Length: 208
Image 1 (cartoon, rainbow, N blue to C red):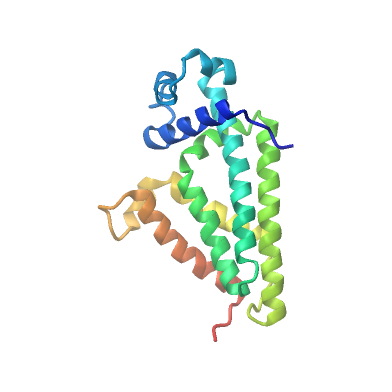
Image 2: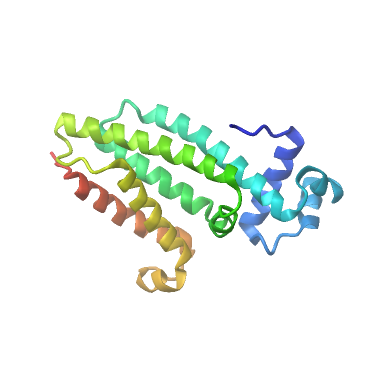
């Protein structure tokens, strides 16, 4: 069930997200958030209870916004060729994972005891999987794809590879060609290029 947020909550969450993205969760204080949001510190407790609980709200808010933006994105590519749709789907999920990379450590902890986060994620993953499945079937029917790997397996490969790269900087940066750039930006570019090759190989994509 979609959770409704008040305008004030959304304002605070938007501010908190920008600060946490820049400074990290530990480096962002309640005072930082309240000052930037132009509210009293007590308002954080009133609306969310604590900074930790606010993160739970923030994650749920972000998942809802991501689902909404994905619906628009999927609508925009639905008339494209299967190979174009697949490329865009892979690019979309990878870019979202890297863009909101600061959530991943929190989510790993929070999922252990927060049922509604599991439900929100499950809904998003199944929606995304259904889109991948539809594209695979269209590609096979049109002869563009030779094989029809399971959509849930493709999504698992994409998610798993992205999260491994995000969480293992010390390892992956050894293999990045441009060390002076921002790690996540450089890593995303390398990982996405290789992921597209892998996915299309699994599909047996036939180039013209």
